[in-house]
Image (cartoon, rainbow, N blue to C red):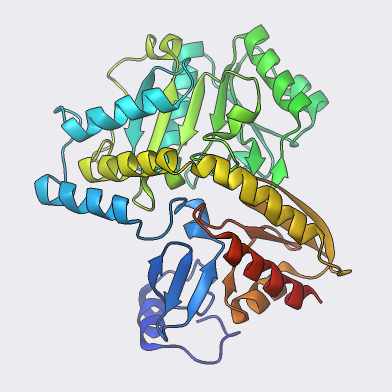
Length: 381
């Protein structure tokens, strides 16, 4: 157990006894969630500004998602893609309507990592090249830490550095993969000129442009996808995290040109297109659209950032973000602020040694945002 906590509950003792210890546990045992709230084993309520790391955009235990999952689980829980399935067909149609017109085909898998690996394989097959360029500090799943790869077929370049990325491109470059907001690396926003130049380079050199929307998709940044803030047309879009409200799922959206070059020889996930995951995703998409959560994130995000900027404290250095993906840079250690806010009933993430990150469910109320600001002010003052 992490020695910064004096006592451990029975649940924590049992978990610590058999887990790998790779996660830095906070010492909280979360038992229940609803909307923008979480409760621990003592029935203490917290305002959640983590959302399962950007997963529960429609809120914890969303009624519509729970109902869809329950109904589908009673009907059919597993169906590999060697067979057709009604719920999978429904989701594919919704994705086609939701994503830009230039993406026409979708691979369903079970995680961001699977989606990233598949996207890279697609790019290599489509171009006949092997080299992949990614940005330092990017998070593209657990399978490939692209931001720090040292193998010759992966190149890491500084984020928002146009000159370096131009020099990195060679005749062997198959794909450039980018996050339009680096959520885990301090909430860094891509500069429009950087994104536009990458898009232009890909068109000029026949390079596959991959946009990873795992952390930014489904309303988080104030638009359905972060790429909606830019005038670009990627060849591949990666989706994950919030798509199924906590049930593991990944999606790779591709253009017709990419799809025409693929064959049936690619490995297929036994969980890809799982009916229960598809049901959760369908309900999640419907809820986001029905209640205008993208616009809500845009409005509440602008309000929240303005209120954070208004905090009078020498510990607050900068506020940056888009929609309800917000980072606050501090002069103190971020872990100190994270723990202090938890003691005040607000759960946030760190995103580097000096940065705390707010990722509340998009259903959070303005009143709860005001309370989060009040608690943050108390901690920073």
